[in-house]
Image (cartoon, rainbow, N blue to C red; front, side):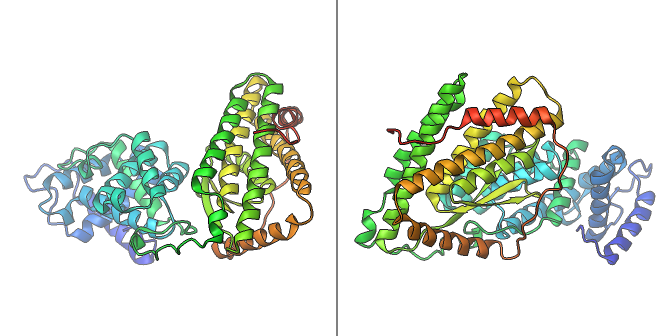
Length: 439
């Protein structure tokens, strides 16, 4: 279904002609199915999908026809609802093999279609997870995403909750299903950051830890530090006083920098290669590009590579796990502070807010970079070759994930002067140059 080839275009024309003969309101006692073959039903679904995408207000007759076909279907291969659900679930499985994960697939669907489409796909992902027993087979991070989806989107009763059988599907449900199906047909591949479902349980066992590697920070030690950082950033986000926000954010940034450098030195001392990983951060509308710019500058100051994917509305971070975790946390905190300051400015025009966020990102980047450089300098010249080896490992993984990426720049445009000034001042209030503060 959904092919854009000449053959399929011809098939849609045939289906259009046929649909004028097999109408939802025909008076005869014959079944609406009218002897249609599975290929005929597929063509009618494809035609309805075009209306769902391009002219949803005119889809009514097609929905009625699909429902009547479903009500009189004698087998799943001539039941439009069953065909669409099966195709969506198969496409979801393929998407997971092509690099997509549950949360970013649903997020991209919301960006490319609608909130209703994203909610419908979230249900489909949960159905696919039940069929594949993902919660018992998947890595922890994947299982956590499925639980997050379940929390955000109420599960609507298994596969029959997607498109109810018997011809009782509402127009809204048909539109959601068909626009999702259309999107899944044209879904691009994305970089593979985690093991895909087809390889779950086939990973090689981890190598035993060498005696020297035992001196590296444990996951428990790392978790304790991250808890401290989260607590400091939470205080910075919650206070209404700029001076307090400065102090809490500065303390968190200093702790982040020292923790990251200490881990780099310990990892290098073990003789082990640097562990470099990728993570997607989902960026919400509105002003997604400005928010992505903020994440980019935070990442850059923390020795993490970042790349924006406009289709998925996400930024992929590539770096050592500690730096990626800390970049994600600091981005979340500074975005909260920026949003609060922007709201307090009492100017809600889109040009003002775009300029505000862009200026905030530029100034945050300058101050974070200065803070990081200051902390690095305090360790002396012995740190330089360690960070160079770490950067080489990050660059190697980045090039593997993004072999064909190119660096571009935004088209320059006039930015609102008041927004720029307000954003710069808000960034100055959010971040203070880091000094050595006790954790």
